[in-house]
Image 1 (cartoon, rainbow, N blue to C red):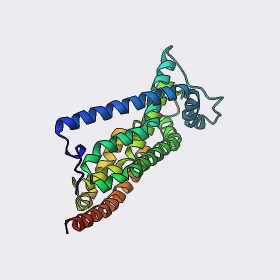
Image 2: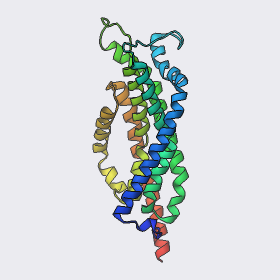
Image 3: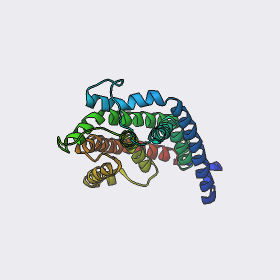
Image 4: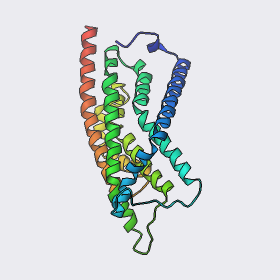
Length: 255
């Protein structure tokens, strides 16, 4: 049976208060992470500059971005600190999401908290890492597609927006299987429904990836769409197994 604590029987207004508290805690975690990222800016800058240096065929010490506005450097540092804060705070964000949805789970299912946070963090890092290591070929495509008549000098603001957006988009996209598994556990969708609309899911994944990835190049589109579809199939399998386990436990408790 479901959790019968006060938390498990919250009213709509109490759920809204709970959501507000979770959002505030998440914002505080992001702010703390942003402060840490601000002081780690030189190290983060060199890491994010590496794909551009690979494109230029030079070391980090030798390749430079073209700053054209006095405030651009400050703006870049603020944005990197902000996105870095989200990445650093990701375990806290995942924990807050878990705590918000636990009233809808059975008591014995709440032990999945740590595996959920761990799996979510690993998937986020895998997605962000894939985006980082796929950026060099993506940049090569974007540079070459314009022809040889263009002088390729990148400004820091657009470049870092591109790489941070891509890493966040890939990281969030890799959370896709966890979302699908929870939808099945919550009884919102069935594994049979996901299997039935497999073709629609493929089209939806491609469209979603095209929207959330800033570069728009076919290389990036393919390298994120394929893992997300594999995650779709994996989520169906895991969700089906967990749902069957839940039903067996329900039958045992009711007998």
